[in-house]
Image 1 (cartoon, rainbow, N blue to C red):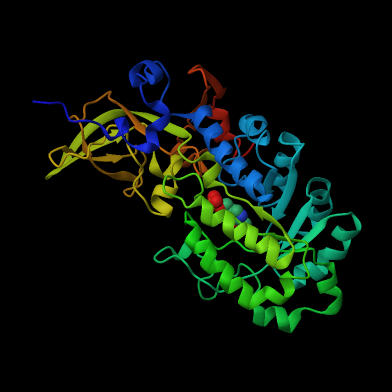
Image 2 (cartoon, helix red, strand yellow; image 1 turned 45 degrees about the vertical axis):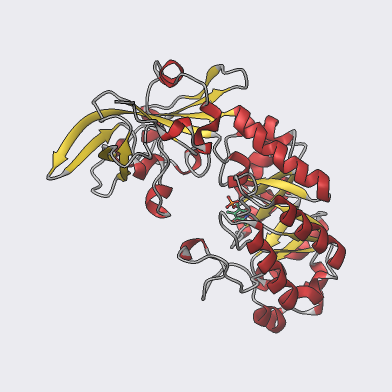
Amino acid sequence: MEKMLPKGKTSPVFEGLRGKNIEALFGTLRTPCYMIDEKQLKKNCEILAAVMKNTGCKILLAQKAFSNYDFYPLIGGYLAGTEASGLYEARLGKEEMPEGEVHVFCAGYREDEFDTLLNYADHIVFNSVSQLRKFGQKAKEQGKSIGLRVNPECSTQVGHEIYDPCAPGSRLGVTRAVFDREMTEDTLELLDGLHFHTLCEQNSDALSTTLTALESKFGDILSKMKWLNMGGGHHITKDGYDIPLLEKCILSAKEKWGVEVYLEPGEAVALNAGYLASRVLDVVENGETRIAILDVSAACHMPDVIEMPYTPPLYQETECEDGADCRLAGPTCLSGDIIGDYKMAEPIKEGALLLFGDMAIYTTCKNNTFNGMPLPYIYRLDEHGKISLISDFGYTDFKYRLGH
Ligand SMILES: *Cc1c(COP(=O)(O)O)cnc(C)c1O
């Protein structure tokens, strides 16, 4: 019988491993571990750099998705800077990608941190007119560019409410009604730009729809602004993304409102640029269900599997209907620490090496040590196929989060 082909051999998610011997690459490494694929990262950056070149827009790395700063020199060679969710990410961006711009958006800035933040940030985006009133003047005096996040009230995604800042009752961004009620001459005068972030893993048709809504809500304000930041969620580097339409959207905004355009994708920068390797510790059965217990945990090492939720791509999975059914799960005490149900190219055995794909984004930066689980080591796979260790972790990384 012909061997069933694992998905990893054909799926774009594992493009970076094509032609490579998986056992030779990962076989001697301590699992679980992440491997960041520099070639894939570079490929993504080249696509983004081409959009900048074709449109004159600026693209920033949203650090909350991928803050593995060892790769900032590479990314900084292509992109215009970093976007931060608060003080620590702003500092990381400034220190590790010093030649780039640092933009920050936070739903609530703290009085006791704001002066420090001013040391790192170039653009500061506020989430409300009251925060703009409280901090805007001070930031302006320090030469910062000031923005306000607006809510165009245009949901373009269904079934993903926790990722929809336009959902009813959302706290993210000022609606036009609130803008009209609260904005005064002096606060409007502080503004250099508007910011919106409403997309999540979406194509440029959703951006186009959003820009139409934005124009009808805030078109009059935009023509008084210096810049428009279109946030993240643009799946630019994914196969099938309509880049010409994105470029059309950017050029049309620039022309219509005379603004400079920023994008701040996270996912798109490091899409498919990392793997998470794991080994099977045990195989158990319950009724019809065969369950492999892995040394990696969904709850600790890929929390979006549970939060989003989604089933991560697996190299050893097969598209063949008669693949061996297997549930993959973590070793923690959480009943729901389940990675997913898969059809395996080969029946699963203790000790087998398993590789999860697209594990660069929203993974290492969201890890936790629940149950005293160790943090996976992080390796770099460079362009020449050479592997080097970036970070190892141990007992103290668990202990010192709890006390000293
Ligand atoms: C999350 C976020 C981003 C990045 O989103 P991706 O989906 O990773 O592209 C950019 N800007 C803001 C304000 C965000 O909250």
